[in-house]
Image (tube, rainbow, N blue to C red):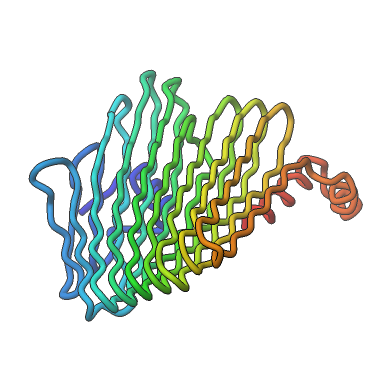
Length: 307
């Protein structure tokens, strides 16, 4: 299947794909399925009651990758999709999602993805999600992802999410429930500029003894942009939880961080850290003595911070 230059660029940005991938995948373009493929271990089924798909990862699966990117190149589309992931007991899978919007006209364009993960006993999930916007249209590019995670006993999920460029407004909501000895690790990276707005809302219930969660958010806010970070970890048993929010504020941007911990058991061990500040002057000076301009030095520091 032939892709035009814009489609190729969006796929590269959100899923690191140079072309249509091999293996299991579902590519959604402008509100419709563009192309799909399944394998012996990963099935993808179209929903019949609402837009979206069911992704079934069989227990015999060991480290196969499935790609489910969304790309939008038509201005004005309001895309809403429901994707459910069923990870069978003992499976081990890599899931690459993400959304890219390219807009060159007036009119707002949006994508709201509601992803629900059902992670079985002793199953492992590595999940990548990146949001990206391009084009010089006057309309806003809006992305509001919702992620619901349920992890059974001994299961684990690592989420790597990033939004670095071009999204005018986003509200990112994640809720999770952990069973005994389950693990959830979340690494989030966000950069805003101009008049952009980004809000993150994590809420995790740790219900099983021995379970643990670790949430890390790295954020850079430039120009007049605004970011808000909310995180609540509820320790309801003998468990451990940690949230970290580190942010760099530049220009006239604003950042609000509200991490919260609820220890509902005497055996819950919970920690949070939040740090917000500007780039240290000595860091800039050190790089500028090596021949970089102030702007180049700032870019180097920001890139290193978001790695």
